[in-house]
Structure formats: structure tokens, C-alpha cells
Amino acid sequence: MFTRRNFLKISSLAAAYLTGFAKKVYPDEYSNVFIAESEDIKKAVRHAVDMAGGIARYVKKNDVVALKPNMAWARAPEYAANTNPIVVAEVANLCFKAGAKEVYITDNPCNNPRSVFLLSEIPKHAEKTGAKVFIPQKRDYKEMKIGGQFIKEWDVLEVFKNVDKVINIPVAKQHGSSVLTSSMKNWLGAVGGFRGFMHQNLHVAIYELAAFFRPDLNIIDCSRVLLRNGPTGGNLNDVKVLNRIIATEDQAAGDSVAAGYIGFSPESIEYLQIAQRKKFGNISKSAIKIYYEKI
Image (tube, rainbow, N blue to C red; front, side, top):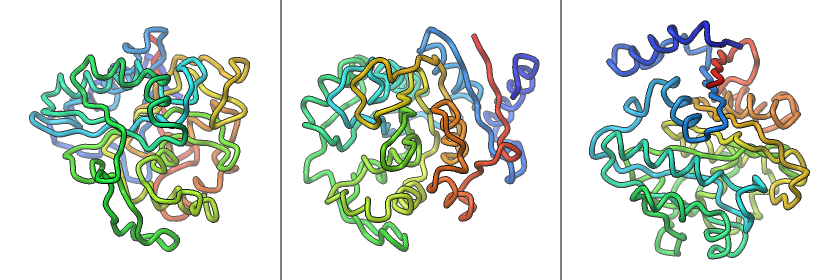
């Protein structure tokens, strides 16, 4: 793991990204994971994104951007069942500062949508930035070819395929069915239909949806993580405050790092093993370059 000694190197990477001379700084066999830690969560978000090359690398002037938080459960923010609303709002704010024309935020909740949107506080915070937060309606879905062996076609929230840029903003937490939910599993909230069907082959479904959506950037909320009784939580004793934000382009690598925070090895999570076999991303420590800054 790298610390402040590497900050100048990180800055040079960011400069290379912004000038456009190199889309990838490291060889493809490596994945970069940038972690910022601060009690000021807004500051942690900004710093993690800066370490990843800056928001201008991902969002251009007049872009229409869609943000995908985990906004599935009727829980208050402190229970870590949903993405921290402060994180979502700060990402929206960064997008607008980069010149985004519009920012949309949505999720297909598991609990009553109005209760989820109210208790999660994501609309309350994000709408102050000018972002548009909406509860999905039937008209917002369109059947699309997923291209998987298990999921061939499915109803998809069109906003995540029709915009210029997509940023995935999951919360990292333990999950009773998939062991971990973070970047890759977050895409189950971007589809409609009978999602219970996906649980017949859940880990394959997670991989196939993640491969279909392919966000431009993943910002993983580890400000507080749910260690047990996920994905719904409900007991503050199950929540651990870390004050960390992960930024990465590699969903599998980001999830591998987040898995360690929850207490799991990436090798113990089937969907991450699938991702590695399919060369979708890196999960081994030797193939992930971690840059960490406490600020």
C-alpha cells in the first residue's frame, strides 16, 4: 500500500490523464485503486477523485451524467444500508463543477420507493446541487440485450445507457446471498422485472450486469460499512466507521479492496472469481496498485 510518499507520483498520473497523453498509465495487467480517508467525507470524495485523475478526466463540459447509488432500503444513513447521501451529493457537485449539463440519480429500490428515497436522505442532499433524483416508473425501463449466458435480455433503466457518462456510487457492505455488495452487485438496482430470478444464478448475474453497464468511474462509499446482517442492516452495532472513499475504474479491483474492509478475501467471493476468470478485472493483491492518503 502506498502512502504520502507517493503523492507527487499520483499528481503526475493525474496530469497525464488530464492532458490525454495516456488513457492508462500502468500496463493493463494492473488496476489502480485510489483511497482517501478523512472525517470530512466531502473532502475524502474530492481527494479520491483527484487521485484517480480528477473529475475532468471523466466528465466533460455539457455532459449528461447518471449516478447510480445504492438506494434500496428504507433505512436512515447511519445504518449503512444505502450509500451515504453526502457522498452522492458531493459527486453530483463535482460533476457540475466539471461542466455537466445535467446529473440524474436513481435506483430501483427493494423497499417502498417513497420510504427509501425519504429515509436515505439522498434526494434531500443531492437535489441541493441541482441534480435530478427520480423514482423509476415503468416508462423509464427498456428491454435490452445484456449479452450474457444467463441474462440474455432484461428491462434496463434507460438513463444508465443513454447518458454521456455513468458513475457508480455503491456502499460496501456484507450481503447474505452474495457475501459482498459493492460496485458489481450495485447494478441489480439498475434493472426492473422479476429480479428474484437472478438469484437462481446470482454470482453469474452480478458479473453479467456489471459487464453490461461498465461505468466510467466507481466511487465506493466506505465512510461507514455494514459488517453483518446485510444488505438491510438495522443495528448500529453492525456498522463500522472507516471514513474512506475508494475511486477506481476497475469494478472488480475496487470490490476486492472493499471486501477486505468487511472481513472477506476476494477469493472467497464467487462473482469476483468469475470476473477474474473472464479477465473483466483484477482481484489479486499482486495485480492491484493501491494508493492511500489520509488527509
